Every structure is written in C-alpha cells, then in structure tokens.
Amino acid sequence: MQIFELINVINEISPLSDAFSDDKVGLLIGKPESEVNNLIFAHDIDRKILKICNEKNINTVITYHPAVFNNFSDLNYNNSYSLPLEFLKHDINVISVHTALDVCIGGNSDELAKLFKLQNIKTFGNSNENNSVGRYGEIDLISKEDFIKMIERNLNTSVIRYNKYFSEIEKIRTVAVVPGSGTQFLSEVPKNIDVFLTGDISHHHFLYADYKNFGIVQVNHISTEIPGIKKFIETLSSKLEIKIEYFYESYYG
Ligand SMILES: [Fe+2]
Image 1 (cartoon, rainbow, N blue to C red):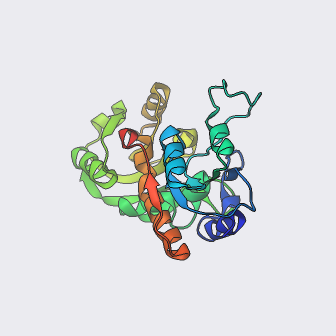
Image 2: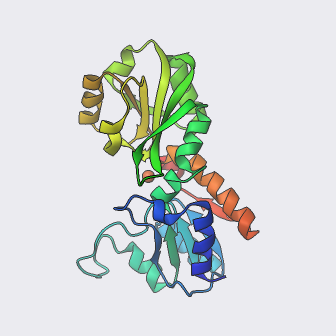
C-alpha cells in the first residue's frame, strides 16, 4: 500500500478536509507514492518515536498532533523545530489527523460525549457547515465532588484545576466538552451550561468563565484525546487488517 492509498482509508474514517482551515493535516512529511512498509500511531513526534522507527524499520507514522506546526524561515538543523527534518532525512512519512479526527462522526468529540453519557447532544465550534468540535448535553444530576470523580475515572487522569464559579456549584446537569485546547471556543460555549471541560486553560479563561457564570474544569490535555484516538486506531486496524501500535507520553496524560 502506498501513502496516498493509506490516506484514502483514513479519509473514510476521518475526512481530512473537515479539519479546521487553519490546521495542518494530511501528509506533512514524506512522499505520497512511498510504499508503507510498517505503520505506527504516535500522539506526537519526538526523538523516541524516531528511534522506534529506525530500530523497527517503520517508515510511516500517523500522528494526532500536527508533525509540522510552524512555518520554517530556514531549514537549518540548529533550528529548535528541526525534528521534522530528522524524519524527512530518514525517509519516514508522517500523516497527521488532528482536528479532522476531533470533528468526525465517532471521533474525539463524539467519544467524549459518549464517555460522559451526554443526553440531547448539541454542538458548537464549527470547522465547517457540517462538523464541529464542541459537544454539550445533559447528564444525570450529580454533585461537584462526584463529577470530579467521574472525570478522573472516564479520562484516567487528574483534574488539574477549576474556576471559582465551579468551586461554588452544588449540582451539575449540563456539561460541554472540547478535546485538547478548547479555550479558543470559550466565547461559543452555550449559555446556561453548568460546566465546560477541556485542557490548557489560562488564568484569564477562568476569570471569563466566572464572569459568564459557568464552571470550567481543566484536565491534562491529551487525556481528552486518547479515548477517541484509541477508537480510530481500532477502526483503522480493522480496515487494514493489521495491528497498529499507539505511542503517547503518559507523563502528559
Ligand atoms: Fe491536542
């Protein structure tokens, strides 16, 4: 199978054209006509992944986060973002799925909604006319303490922190979720939700949520992405009839 054929299969599960227009998805490093000799999935590229590829003669990596995210002003190995050059030098193809996987049917956002058993699910944060990254809906009425336990159990992670409004909530009914860094959609979080759950929250986001009267809870960034990615790998493995290993840095989970 050649890289472009693998991309066709990925598109059947998670159409890359549905990603946010400012995102980087698809074949970011490598050649479309390259023959796939072996395939792994990595949450991010790093030196460990490069080593695994070289040791196991793996020439194709599908990553969740974009393998190339900056615009190069030079292609100098002294550049602090030179890791993609190492993959290119070793003829390793890297395909990234990122927000295409978030927004697709059964993708990261749907998987979060399913994990929290959201009812009457609605969406926000559109990538295009038909796709969006945010999900919100109702859960069975639950105390703040039990909701925290539910988050930690569902996502196999720890709640990092939450805003003052959340600390004063007694019961929770309506929950909004965005996988990864969801704060760019903060102004689109619907009114009257009790809690918004995502990763990467800054102080001013907490203050904004206090001002808007909703709770906001921060968890480890990749813990919100791992469940949907596992499902994607399962589907892709079954379509390709191969076993695909998934590597992520558990320190950040
Ligand atoms: Fe992310």
